[in-house]
Length: 228
Image 1: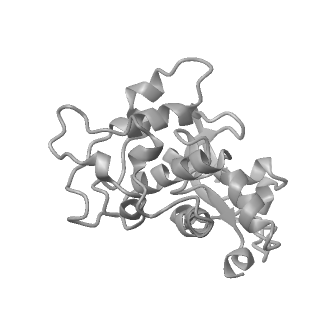
Image 2: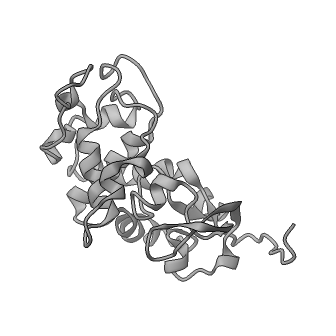
């Protein structure tokens, strides 16, 4: 048990995990579609020409995957991908961000079923959607939703990376104990230490491969900000 306990208040921020898809990414897509900057029928390859089927892929068709398919979780991807074990991320060159490497990995991830023939809830879909939003807006996803959605609505307790945006650990509900310690500003896991995770995203793929900002996870909020 922990000797120092922090009481939850109406201002306490919670790691809202996969609800990030609803309260960040979907809002961003809706706004861009409304403004005519994005169509649900746009293809991923229209934004990222390198988005192709691997030569030995058993299922072909990445060139035809549309934004609509990603939103409906019927693009053809598996539910997730072990980015943290990928050789490209483990051996990345100095000076390149984890997120840059992750985008490269996504370009080569194969489909596991034919687009539109099934529905598999997939983080890959929403990681890709986040990259598309950033490509169109020329802003990081956290900057875009803050400036265009949260601030205009007067929401003060909803943010990515709370410890870098004016909040303290004590302002955030803890998510888990005995996890590998994570740094606030440099995305890397401590292999030797573990502790209480508080104020840093719990999702490992949002934390390291996506530098804490992703369409599938990473957002923190209090109940009032979500309710409004």
